[in-house]
Image (cartoon, rainbow, N blue to C red; front, side, top):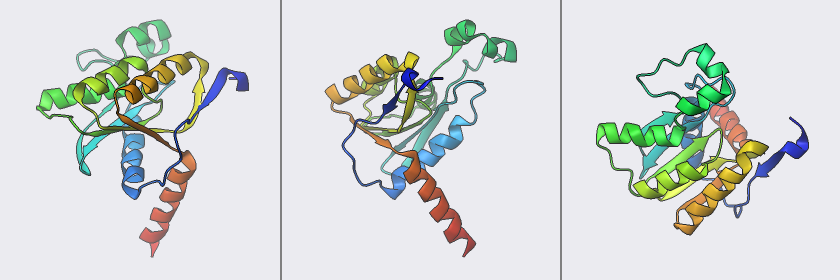
Length: 177
């Protein structure tokens, strides 16, 4: 990937990073690792009032076996892939959990336009994504998604990876003592 093929995804007003936001973003990072997608692993962790509600990661529907052959063929994969945010919504629906006034922590890629519409529909209050360089193919959809979140008065912000790394380091140091 060349430099001109990416854009840094961070256009929010800088704000103090809350320790709870860092903790829940680490959970979204952990959940992203459960995805079997070899090219893009996205995780979503949803909370309300600091209480975990559900999680989701990008993957195929439960009834479809995500074979390496299907995952390797981008055209086939994209026809079956459910995004992490939508998977979290499906999980909440299956469990009978309302996501009204919740916060979605998204690790991997920020919300695309379709996911943003789903988050608006379920009543998300906040969406927090990681600051990153986006591949060219995702730029338009992610920018439109964020625009829709802002128009719907859903708070959107990013956390830079450096804050997360520092938080991880501080936490590991305090556990040693």
